[in-house]
Length: 245
Image (cartoon, one colour):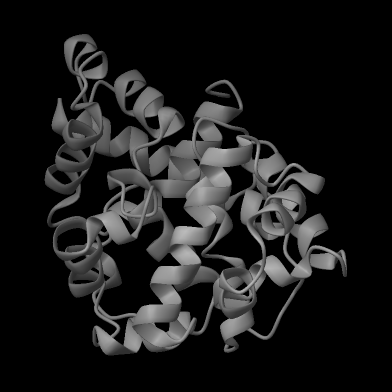
């Protein structure tokens, strides 16, 4: 069974490489094209990530770009400005272009993250990563174990890994041990994993499904040419496009 799954995964990966899985543009491709080595760029790909819960990722990042390009709302991408602004001002800016859909809850998440990054690294994501040796494992351990409450939603099983994956692709932060980034088990990855027979129906319906998917892919790909994040986009697009081909 394992060999069959691996062969199917190779086929999906190849179809992705060939552009056969439909539109291959990803949600995060909607960005202002900032200098990849700048903190401004790292902040752009960090703060909205924590609002990516049970919503369309494409519309999230479209809203992020509109918020960034609007001179009235752009300040929300600067942690120092956010924590010194009135709550209502921050809320108004986050909701103007529907970056925050839950007015109070998501404004609070944004404020908390801005306070955390200001306290830890003066609002600098590059320095935050550097303080943890740019090491994926140390960053994840710190965020999920040592200081979980300081990182609402961003410390979650799915988002923490997906955030580091995005940082590795869209920023110049020299992350180490990127092969140890887990596959981000969102609903599309979960559906694709079930479709391939990697997890059972019982596991798919379990509250621990993310852990089952992460562990299953790590085991499945051990000793192969792939690391889990190699299949992140191919599986995501395969599911999103209705398991084409």
